[in-house]
Length: 387
Ligand SMILES: Cc1cc2nc3c(=O)[nH]c(=O)nc-3n(C[C@H](O)[C@H](O)[C@H](O)COP(=O)(O)OP(=O)(O)OC[C@H]3O[C@@H](n4cnc5c(N)ncnc54)[C@H](O)[C@@H]3O)c2cc1C
Image (cartoon, rainbow, N blue to C red; front, side, top):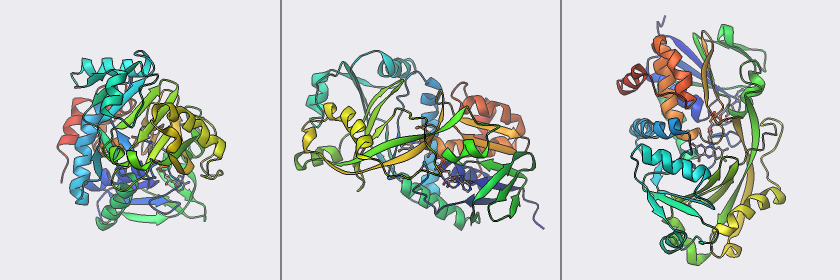
């Protein structure tokens, strides 16, 4: 009989896979239960891309997690045998020097992270695909880029299966945190020494006691665009564009590595049901986000809309992640709002370190919530990870 501890992970999005990765590396026998195919187009982790960047408004805790997140991604690339990140740099623009852009700028400068302030005219001169109209403040940063999300999820799942992680396609009807167990929709039951619930926007319904109303599912819209021919080369070399505010805004993901140009709405709808609702976006929903982006795009009318769809965030009111022990043998990973992907592997390693050494557990939740520096023991545990 095996003396290895066992772990059951609910959900094969980036968080569940990252937890499985961290736990397998720490010697756990891991089983992942997922209701859909992997990668899952209904999940929060999958379409072509997700952004990683240091600019984080006033949320300095998350800004400081970005370098450790890059280090965790480097471990993923080593395991996958390929780098699924494309460096683009970051262009942040705003109508005003206050608000999200100003907060980001102040936090970045306070930590000595290099950025270049740009005037509206600089933006248009350096990146002619963008207009200067309405830009009151802007900066550019060299670090930052695109994580090829769908390929990462597929690659991680393949890697884990090759490492002996068991994948089971099944729907969990309910979660029993106290017993670290799942009851499946077909009547079966699965249990382990440890249960990690990483159910994305489905989680508030599965764990109403622990998560609702702190975390709610939120239908979000994204639109795929084809730039007009004269701008295509420039877009292939363009930075990500962030035009964010505390209460919303939009971002643009450049068309790197054969992916489409994508714009996304950062306002939270805080409505919808990840299980019941479809992923098609209406023309009116797409038009709302296009209306934000058009003033920033030169020749905006010449862009062709090639698709629009909905996805779901699991929104926590102040965008703080919930990575917590909700029972002695059960952890929840939730509340990732619109910014969790970049931190998946880092959080997976941290969860695995904290369950291996329970003295680290109390430091996990406040750090993941972006509210405290990592406990020294947690950082040391991340650095000393077995190969
Ligand atoms: C359009 C969009 C853009 C984003 N952009 C960025 C970005 O630029 N940068 C960034 O860092 N983050 C970004 N995010 C956020 C990030 O992608 C999410 O925070 C992250 O992917 C959440 O991962 P997850 O594993 O928690 O959820 P999911 O990927 O949703 O995984 C949860 C899984 O659990 C499964 N599951 C749920 N319930 C059950 C059940 N009862 N039984 C069995 N299986 C179940 C689901 O099928 C699903 O596959 C974005 C999100 C979206 C939607």
